[in-house]
Image (cartoon, rainbow over all chains, first blue to last red; front, side, top):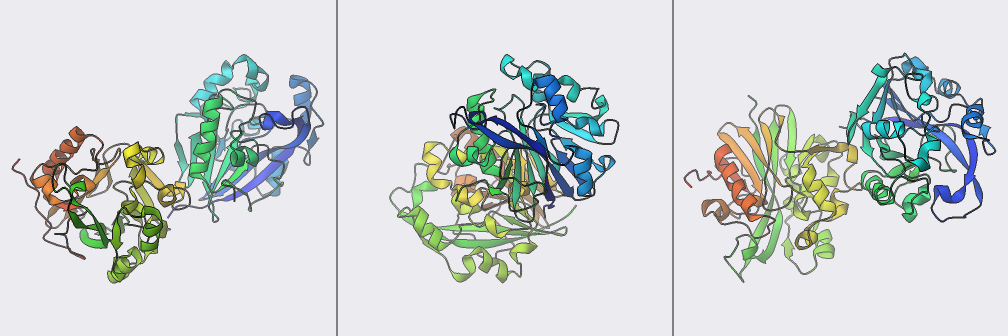
Length: 255
Length: 253
């Protein structure tokens, strides 16, 4: 029998962003408010965190220019959010980074020097050192290099990877060159944390990709790979997600 | 070395064109084509090889006029399991030789099992070549039937338990595999559709639902070199609940 896990959304805060960046061609020029979540996975004696959101709103101001209408949940700290579900940083066995954009690995540093292993695709790791010009503004090496994680904590993976019985990382390139998504078996069914392979549930239901992009063809293909593998989905910036939500996730397949 | 007990489970009968089973022979004859799954028990495991069709109703809706299908009460997967005293939830391993509709139709019943298939077959099942599109139905193997986290994808030969070996079988589909089982009498190979009927092996005559013929002949050699007995997937010589006296592999050729 396959192990099941409990899945809990931890949201660090909200920012405003131009709508068509989330869904190509949609509401061009109109801003929308999006969450910046991580996902806590617990079961089978393991504690696993999927992504670590942004470092802080002040960090975004300093490195990316003025943050658009940023609002922290609570104090915007992963340590605070984890404490609310009874986790301490030293409990966390794995952090899976879907990709290394600043809003997905921002608080990796919380786990520096601990037992935590960071699961990152080799392709993303290499791409993050030399991103294409259109994505340079998303990558800040100090968020994921030795300033935030010791080298022996970094585990680079290639292709589909069974992290534990009932938890599978699989490549979903498109948004970035080495993006991956994560499947977690729960009592209700298989939940896919899409990361930014699908920013919004609508990306999947309408088969329309986002517009912060490395490759469009693989991005469309990744939506199909998510549909093949999962019954429920947590998208990287879906506004309907609730902080500490641990069930009732959106269906991958509409209707 | 663990030894296993092997029991034939009959999953109903198709009435169809006989030359589908034998390339270049038996044209224009309608024949009974029984469908078989196999129950394997031993070493603390209950294992099912292939899972038949989903139901008669499913077949009527989805296959249309292609075949007339009959199924007795104990030829559904639930009925056959009940006959041998198993419940679907007891089964801890399902092996799909391939993902044609008559070999994975009842996968959805096995909620506690791990499912073994060749990755090449899984990939091909979503985008089959045109002449095989009529055999693959995503609802039978996709997310709504089997949780993705329950699949065990194989890239080639694998001994999944002591005495249970899976070997890729080319010819019939892109990623078919044969199952080799250690029994008290010797090694039994469940060949499914790469040797649908004994005539395929004994007369070196390929089945007629094919991908590559060279791979099909190689499969015959793999069976001859690795098994003492063979269980064809659709041969009327096989008996419901048969547990012994399986057909001998023809070693001569």
